[in-house]
Structure formats: C-alpha cells, structure tokens
Image 1 (cartoon, rainbow, N blue to C red):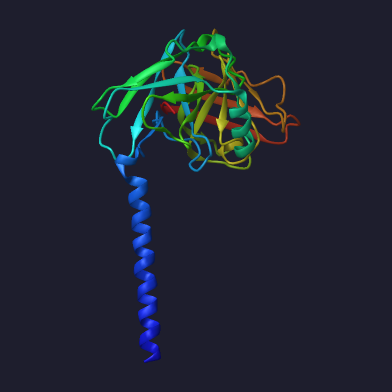
Image 2: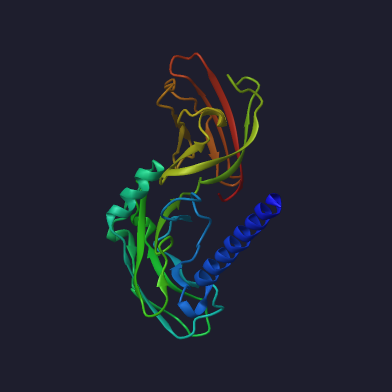
Length: 286
C-alpha cells in the first residue's frame, strides 16, 4: 500500500511538472503575447558560436567600394510580420567591441568613419514578410590592412515586436584581400628542415597591400609567424619570420607567378641553421 502511494505521488509530481513546462513553453511561444523578436539575421557564419555578441567576418578583394546587405529579421513563432515594422539602427558604442574583445581575447577596434558609409538608419520589414535588408558600404582602398577594425550595429527601436537581447547588436569585421590572398596547396621539399615533403592546405591572409601571412604559422605546423612580401613590379618574394630571423641576402629564386598564381619560396633561418623550400599553389578564395 505504501509503495502504491509513493508511486502515485511521483506520478502526480511528474505530470504537474510536465504540465508546468508546457504552460511555460506556451507562454514563451504564444504569438498573441508578442514574443517574436526583431534581430540581426546572419550575414555569414557566426565567428564564435556562444559569444554574447554575434560577430560576422566578411573579406573582400580590395576595391574602392563594396556593399554588405545587412539583414534585419522578424523571428519567432509568427510566420510573418502582422504589419509594417519600422526598425531603427545606429552604429554601436566602442564599449561593444571592448566587451567582445574581453570575452573572446580579440583586439578589434572601431572602424574609422572614413572606411564605411551608413546611408540608411531606418528599415521597414513589410507586412507579410520576415526580413528586410539595408546596405552598408565599405571603402576598402581606405583600409589600413594592418588593423583589425570592425563595425558594431545596434537596433535601437522597433514599431512592433521585441528587440532581441542576443541579436539586437551585431559586429561586422570587414577585411580586404590582396591579389595573393586565398587558400593554397602547400608543399615543402625533401630538403626542408623540420617538416620535409609536406602536402597540406593552408591560407595566405592579407597583411598589407602586398604581403600575406601563412595560417597556420611556420611550415603550416608551428605557431611562429611567417609573412611573405611580394614586389608587385618584379614578383620577387621576401620573407619575414620574427622568431627565427631570415638569412640575408635573401634567395633571389623566391618568386610569385601571377599567371599560375603559384609562389615558390627559398629561405634560411637567420643563423643559417635551417633551410625552408616552400611551394604555394592557389586553390580558391578563403
């Protein structure tokens, strides 16, 4: 008898708990309660899933101007906006980037106003729709490619719906890509120290208008920074490796082939102790 009472009590608590959960869910998802949210939609993959503020990375070939369509979304259980929704957007405060940097260990700084143009501060999600876009123009020829600038945007108000706490602010990190930037097949010769006969895929990431950094680092294996600088007139390549140094004068065989988009590099550690012979063959954009 006692066992039956205990079982009944357990069943009662399970049912009531489950019912409470359902009620809580129904309140959260009830469209009549206005639980759709106004938020930034994804313009690319979020850089760090789980970050307090979403950050989106976009890289473009260097040009006088490129346009990013920024998405504003009406998200939630309602299938579409019940009325036209006017949304106001402004450039976010520098503290937004400071908070992201502290959380993620990054070093983003606020993009200078000369590098972008925000011509629209208001966008309307039409009745019956779920999204609207507005353009942000970036002037990549103005960029200082050695800096990691980003543009935070914040939704300040909406004529209907609730502004999302998680996606009411978003950060857009915009990078320029020079002619040597991209994904490459990477090979080393049998004479290469530490990692001979390598055959990997790497990325070369723009540092300045004429230099790129290998990612991962040295020999696509170590964290040591290695930067390749290409002379745009002669296509000669010189190497910089702060941790190891580079023997001077550098090998004149190091060249970029613009027709084949292939780079062959020959260099030695500063003290002559290690030899590196590398070939990069372009595969596609990163």
